[in-house]
Length: 395
Image (cartoon, rainbow, N blue to C red; front, side, top):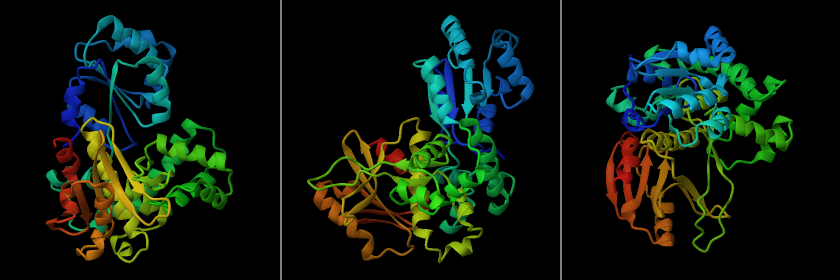
């Protein structure tokens, strides 16, 4: 089954670049997308030992052999990032829009290579696992939030009918044994897996490097390095605090989130949706699910994600997400409850008074199903939240 992806419209626009880069976590659907979209292109995969050996030993002959009129897809190119220097020569000599399509799953290695070789020549897109909107129009949207949070959003869960406790432990094990070692030399992989579990236990919370390092038995410097590795391989992201202070001292510490809640649940030992109902992590996981989806919506439009949170230093007032469109702020509160209560509006009301923003630009996304216009903002069920970034970008 092929899931139609929101990023396809951006992909059409990016074909004017001589090189198109589609990056994201393993199994997010990159290979399926490029093979479907660029169906006449020659497909090459640098995870194939013979293909990689040919490219590394004789890059010029490699390019000559696979020269064609349509174009070339190079999958998982981070295994030989130096190859981009040879692509640069081809690009500058022949000037063919959209000829090279690169995919990769290691942001750290790729960014270094791109900066050195393809700056100004490549259009970069990020493909994350399935979004709420993609689930919706592919008719695979779950009716309950607990179900989708535990199952996560990786396409193989749905195309191959994997149970979460079948797919994610193998995914995590493979990631640790292959991808982490590709980026850095970690001798004790069991300690790194413990580090991942500690991060999962702090999802949706302010990042406290010292606390994680102490509980993991590693130095703060190592913990910071390992956070960078998880970021580079699209496992976690750090939501930065917004700088606007409104005459209040604000926190400068980012919050820790995972791009996929299925991975978090697996690390926390949550196997079924029934287990999540009374789990103390449920609120954080719902918040993680929604904020990750907001990132997906931005990336699927082909734009950077202007997403932040706002919190005063004392923690007495916090807004879960701010969308900053060039100084125009949209506030989004996220509530895991399925019934709208007066508590939903407490922070948003204070925020509107403090920031002097129009309540029309304030939203509450909750785990229920209704849409209501209230004096302090719009309340919308999570099913409807999948296009909120597109709506805001058109305002």
